[in-house]
Length: 107
Image (cartoon, rainbow, N blue to C red; front, top):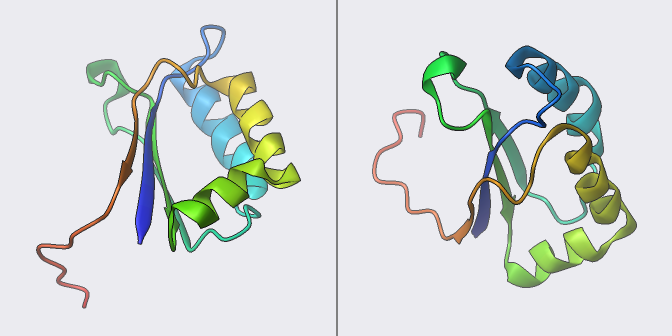
């Protein structure tokens, strides 16, 4: 399983609250339709004034081929174009990782 992790920085013309509102109400419904996505997780800081980033997105795919196909699709292109309306995608780091769960009380 491959996980894409992106730390998001909001667009200069938005407050943190406006960023979160747009992200959850407008962007999330688009991103939920990414082909091949197995899991989609968003996180926002409890104290944004003490955080370097405005949010974290985690997208899970079976493999890198599925991830690439998702973002090469029409939906993927729409998701990336929309991201630029509320965030600065090149400002935060992006990681492609294989997750190893060390503890999971819910399992």
